[in-house]
Image: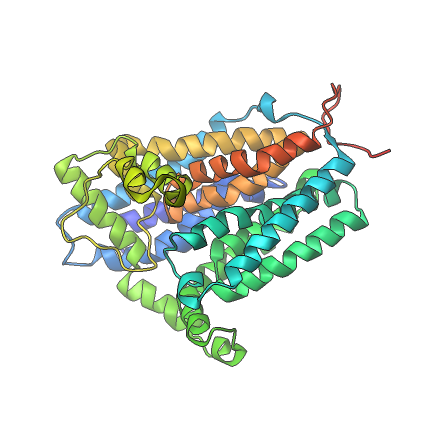
Length: 418
């Protein structure tokens, strides 16, 4: 492995992780988690691409250099965002917060159940459309209820909050086993870990966190095999899971590269040659796709809202793969697209600072925002914006209901129920 870009990204990824390992709770900051994502997901795909003679001349080096710039931008944005967000300071009535969590969980559970009753070809589709999208949109309320209950329980343990957590966990774990979604697993685990850190300053050992990154870097390359096993049988067959060649799959990625970075290389090369920049139209188009229901406005109106984007000729990413956030960042603003990653890190840093002061609204928002921040690396940067819009539409009204609406002199926290 003599490619300088591989060594460069390795150094930056490790630097981001070391910056988190150097202080208590730093493993829950965006630099550590973004560094872990670059290290575990992007880096293993690069050595084979560096030696691929079929890629356009200079395409790999350009994409690798831009990836390195995006990783550096994550660290710079985090440093710049070391101040709180006043809008996320607020007190909650403890009883109302738990009720809000229960209501979100019940509504979300209904749509989770409705989604589970769909035919396998709709329920297990990688690129869902139509009714499954609608069901999953409202099913997200169950995750919001889970996170809200976890935060409430971490501040003040109670049987109602624990019951909500156990109820929601049953649905979430069932979906994780059925789909093998890495992002949902990360969100589920980080919710409990972050709540413990914010409320009680309890963090897992830093050595364990780094070991988990190394293990996940190997395991994540077998997720596709797991999904195929589940999709083929319609259920989890543990004997089949045990036979997955985890090390072999990891070696395959090192030897041949992965589709995600290959997609990014081709997309970045096309954009650089044609300068067909979308100047952020990509974000608008995804918002239209995700939040404008064709069932209500009609397919023709929805399609009319889409802004055409330039794509490479004969370019069709393989099913189940992504382009990575580096591709859409470059396609929007050329080399300045790295500022997207700086902005993501900056916003998350400000929310994290507010959450660390003890404010519950910021804690909930950070927990729900950190996984989309990691998806900005693996999938696309729009994941963050769509996540925040979803929170505003679904979570916002419930948090307004739970607000104590009282002036507070101290950062709180929860207003105890009487």
